Amino acid sequence: MPEAKGDILDNILKELRSFVVAFSGGVDSSFLLYRAHGLKKVNVIGVTIRTPYIPVAEIEEASAFAEAYGIRHRIIDLVFPETLRDNPESRCYLCKKILFTEVKRYASENGFLNVIEGTNADDSRDYRPGIRALRELEIRSPLQEAGLTKKEIRELLRQDGLSIWDKPAMACLLTRIPYETRVQESMLCMIEKAERYLFERGYPGTRVRLHGDIARIECLPGYFEKIIQPDERKEIINYLKNTGFRYVSLDLEGYRSGSLNGKKEAQ
Image 1: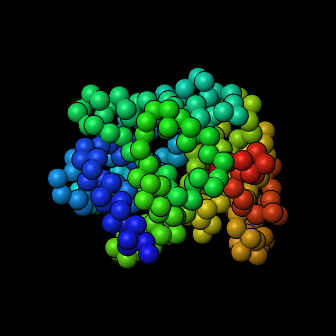
Image 2 (image 1 turned 135 degrees about the vertical axis):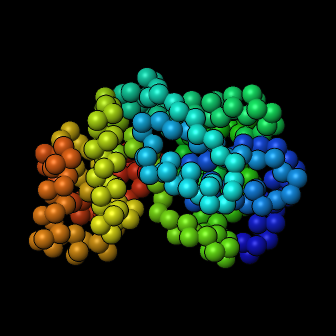
């Protein structure tokens, strides 16, 4: 039962006593921060890293969530790391190493004893090179330690009445660009604008993959009938072309994790 695992999680957090939660604004880190905030005698703050390849909407939602529940929250701005500029295959490992080094520095400078993050029990089944960086930096993953799966986390959020319980998964914008491609901020902006537009039109969880000047839209197969309707298709094409794409395509395989790298990473 998820409630029993929730109790295990609470005990882990109480033992840690003083910690920074690396808070992306996603379901897992939101649950972790919310749960920690509700415990007595626990010194906790959420820290969010803002970089050009993290969607602005994620930062906005993280801030709104923390404010809504009266949770201490800090945003740290980080320039685009040059080691990621060519989108290397090791990007997730390198990114985690860079971001969590910054979070650890913040924790040390502000008297927090630990840094924790939202890897869950399901993540060990996926290809997650970033987890190696977390282990090297001695970052704790209490959700994984408690055995909580994504489904169980969503259920506990739903039971507590938090609207984010069914929030779609998000990943950094670098995952929309093929490996070994020189990344410019303008490319990230195009992708983010296109995905936000599609979300607002009723296609949550949709990815826009960038291939040169081509936008390859991956949406859930259940959206196919709607997205190919003549008027809908025309609106989407016009918007994406005005955003900077020259060609707009719909991937008939639909959304799938890690489609740019043979399903190695969750994206």
